[in-house]
Image (tube, rainbow, N blue to C red):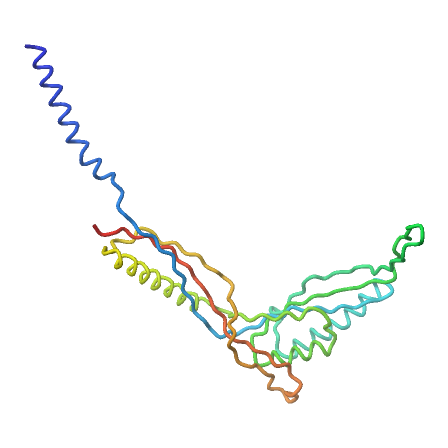
Length: 246
């Protein structure tokens, strides 16, 4: 009799345990999901140019080369300030002093004399931010006339690209939703709630081929360097994961 009661009790316990575990197992079942990656872009005409150039001078001594370089760079800085470039938009970079060597040829025995210092070269670099693009061509012409003889890199950017980046971000999300709806529509299912969103900011703008010419409005406009500013494209990529509606 005792054995029979124990068997009934054990059977009831097992049944209760199975019923208790059934909802838990159902809750642990992961929903079907879909992940989509999409990119959005937005373009804007740049409102600022960044110049990167240098003055290079040589001399028999380091002092002589430095003096010549200092005079030339001083004239360049004075001209830039006269054009309205603020101190905050002028930054020295890559100042360098190097010896210049003379290398002799090897003799018939293959021997070669040690190189001899025949002078020095001083390089003084300058980064300039131009916030008025209409004067860019004239500035390029001016600095070269005053002694800039190295570098010459020009890049275009926006002083405040936040609004353009925001448009790119919205476009990326619109594209992600459209892509996800196309995929699920072809499969005959519907999107559920969004589970996760992440973003990749591509940061630096990419120049576009189309552009407009920027010329100096100064009296000697014919001497201004023609410059095409074009447009900058900002790009944002989003990764979105949805739960699929069952």
